[in-house]
Image (cartoon, rainbow, N blue to C red; front, side, top):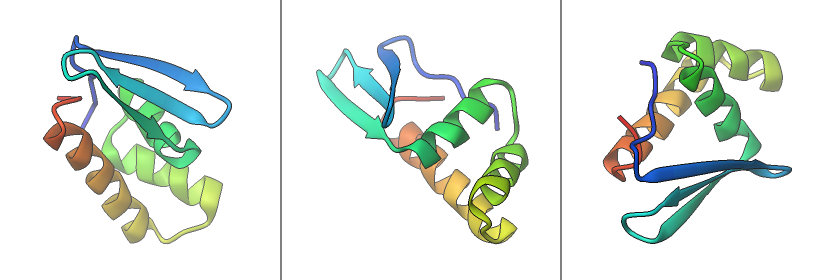
Length: 84
């Protein structure tokens, strides 16, 4: 499940997470630090299981919950037309 943002999406990391700008629609999205960890892992070529493992290490949550969270985030980004 590697992730790639579409060409019309610009990103900027901040002290509070990551901001995504959809240049085509003129809208922006703010990802919190948790979502930023997931996105960074996937952009670096990691799979959903790798991103879930990073969440488990960082936040001491159950692996199954972490995997559902990763899938929900990626699904939301794809449904919004921001990523493929």
